[in-house]
Length: 360
Image 1 (cartoon, rainbow, N blue to C red):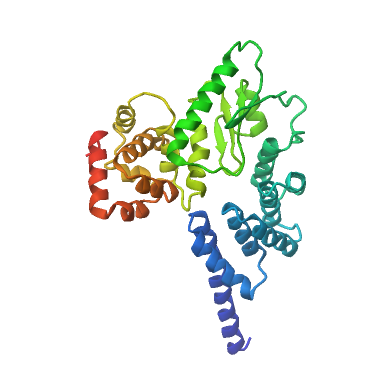
Image 2 (spheres, one colour; image 1 turned 45 degrees about the vertical axis):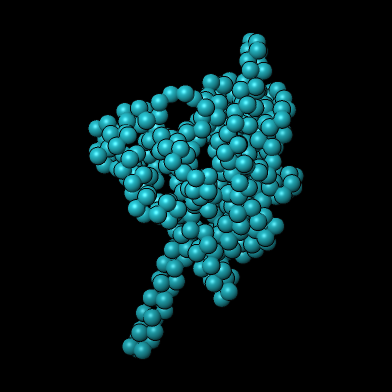
């Protein structure tokens, strides 16, 4: 082969590799919560290339930002370009379902989610579609096994929360006390977060955790803050799950950047339980080899996010102005916290908290 041709092929190959690496970087930025940069870079790509993945990513980020009408056109374009051939279509139908649901088009949402299940492009997209259908489809038309049966929900509307009880037989006064405690907790917690939810908070209160896991594909309890749905055990702490939704929609806007440490920490800090969180955090870090709370904050996943994060968020709530606390909840990164408090003051807070839980 002529050397000039070989050289051109090499250049083309290098260009393609660099192009793919650039797209990988865009996905990475989006998954890290750096959505503004990812959106800018993805938008530059589609100016010169009809890339299904980039259209999907932009649509997904618009959904997460609650700009659903804009998101729908990008997601539909991703599907048109992909021709239902890959993960792009599977996840685009899931996010279309979410976008339609968030704009009040429930039937269209259910149709998209069922289609995402039917084409089964990835196990995760199917699972996501099934989980959403469980929450929004009154007919509960998810593919359970023949031995599974959807509970007969007893629905009770209260001022702040719509409650769905799996079974009230033998509970005596339990549902009424449960609702009273949760309504009071909602009002107390929301004095801090001033949340503006896109829809009324919905609680599914399960008595059969085994059945719940079979139908929902995960352990109780958990919250879908975007759709304002909590799936809880009957014996859970009163404030934990609702705080996930109220802090997410706190002050009317979703968080720009999230971390497990602050996200779980805020739910623990406002769970309405009266135990000593510093003591629990101290016991949890004993012998673990950590030198600072920052080490735990930086971890993507850690069981310590609950006890240590709960104590730390409670500490910040006591030490911060309302504006400072709001900023930390809305952008949960260490970089943002350093800017909010100033580096010197932030380091002093960290040192003081480390001392409180025995980290030196």
